[in-house]
Image 1 (tube, helix red, strand yellow):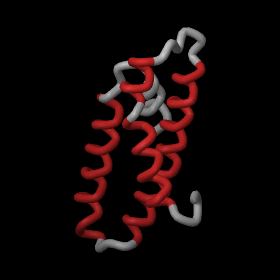
Image 2 (cartoon, helix red, strand yellow):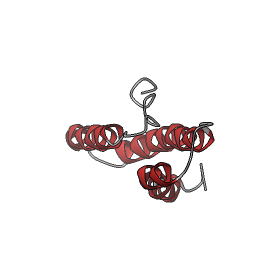
Image 3 (cartoon, one colour):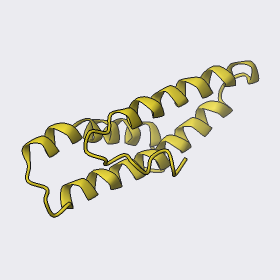
Image 4 (cartoon, one colour):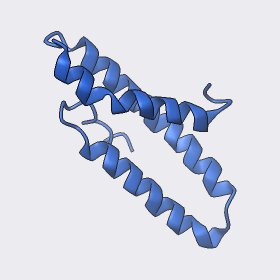
Length: 95
């Protein structure tokens, strides 16, 4: 889907990422394999989210860009705060 349909890709990534706590809470991830998959999904989310943000920013008035920026900051913060298993540790570093 990416880069042709970034918004749809972002939605799918978010659905997968939402399953992080449930998956890691039920599975034995002592080798870190599952956590690595979720870390990779988070890195992909950041790439796709950046593209979506830039597209949205181009499509709105200059006066509304501050509102858009705050909305994306809030979205990233919510994602980073939901980090019980440390799969989103690098999220804020990579921004």
